[in-house]
Amino acid sequence: MKPPGRLPRSSLGSLILIATVIGCSAAAFAYTAGWLSPGRLTPDRMIAALTPPSGPPLGHRRNHAKGICFAGTFEANGNGVELSRAKVFAQGRYPVLGRFNLGTADPSAVDATVRVRGIGLQISAADGEEWRMALINPPVFAVATPDAFHDLLVAAGKKDPEAMKAFSHANPEFAAFAAWAKAAPWTASYAEEPYNSLNSFVFTNAKGDEHAVRWSLVPTAAPVPVAQADLEKLGPDFLEQDITARVQSAPQRWTMVTIVADPGDPTADPSRPWPENRRKVQVGTLVVERIEAERDGPCRDINFDPTVLPQGVRVSDDPFPAARSSVYRRSYDLRAAEARDYPRTEAAEP
Amino acid sequence: MTSAPHRFAPIQRLLHWLMAVCILVMLFVGVGMVSTVAPKYLPLIEIHKTLGLALLFLVLIRLALRLRFGAPPLPADLPPAVKLGARLSHLLLYGFMMIMPLLGLGMLWAAAYPVVLYGGIQVTALLPQSDGVHTLLWNAHVYLGLALFALVLLHLAAALFHALIRRDGVFATISPLPQRERMKPAE
Figure 1 (tube, rainbow over the protein chains, first blue to last red):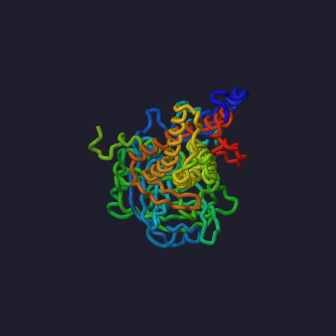
Figure 2: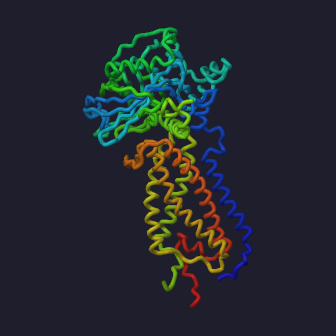
Figure 3: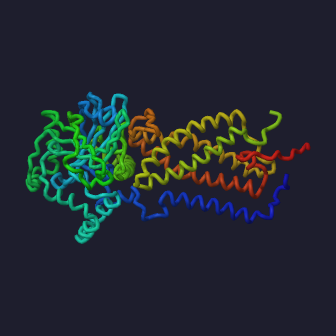
């Protein structure tokens, strides 16, 4: 045994070595955490770009902040089994929890001012396995990549009109969405809207065959075009009033249609539609049976993360579901921590 | 016991190094996954959940082995304050290894996220959805995770200090390498 207190001659070198090992480990950790990379697109940066100048919608989702809950049923007709072994495609009835919503970061937005309408769904199989999704009404997504979506948010947030021009020039795929936003007819009801996955996923059936797919919820209610100016006369919350009244009088239905890609169809880019003649399979019906306010409703604390998928469905090379999952999760963490800013009972509001 | 072991048992050493690698992976994956929106986010989350639960089982085995086999004594000439620090830091490391997976699982349960591991294994939720509980557990998981990384660095620095500077045989007690039989006082 060495006598205590006597350090070998090489101890200075050893100390430097130890300091280097610890320093490099800490630096690698900081790099991995993004602390040294302010340019990295993090969920926090995406949420900062979503946040309006007036501040974040405390207690609410950071996007699609205005919404109303519903409960219902997915009635599977069994046709989906050929495409995916997801349990909820076997003929039968499966409980659904969902949320109609508007594509805005303002939970008190006037309904007639928001172009994009959406639906969040959670379908549960008998064993509790969940499938969550969040679909919107435009036929194509606005941009090709999550980075371009961030650029879009930044450009749209600027007062300078040149910013959007420059963005459109740099992201020509935006034209198709812009044309839809400008020209597509508005309706006065969530029940008259189609809702599209836009993102591509991969279905795997019991034999192991794989198909790239997108899907849509096609409304049974016939869409009645209404001028945007006339919608403004209906009051700020007409969509919630309308869907509540409709569902009270009768359940509202959508047909779930799976669109199967041909080889070579663009799966990685939701701004590019697939040709109209692609195979379509009707796999069931969404029945919305009960509307509940979001404030104390069952959808309030559900994150409609599109990567919560059952066996038989997985993500494709489309980069959006992962990006959405990452950002939705951060949004959830934030709003859960701010619950007191969105009290569950109306009376508690100041 | 008449004679304390002069090294940890081989199974203890194996578990130590296996878990050391896994814990480092967990810490780096953890801070990496929450700072990206890239497609790798999804596999990173899956690795973090699967490996985290595996580590929970491993630490229970490790704890049982520690109680069964004990630990070699620290060198007699180590100052009492340093000995105390060593004991406390190891106690803390065990505490972190036990609580971090539980906090991670709990925060997912409290957010009503299905916990699905690699291979599609579903873990049944044992907590109801609650925004308050989620926030508490989320904060604890994040900040204790950062504290654990700091403790791991301290542990590493101390190990290197014993191995390179004091050369007092402490590192040999856990070294993964087969050991030349050290000279015994009687020989």
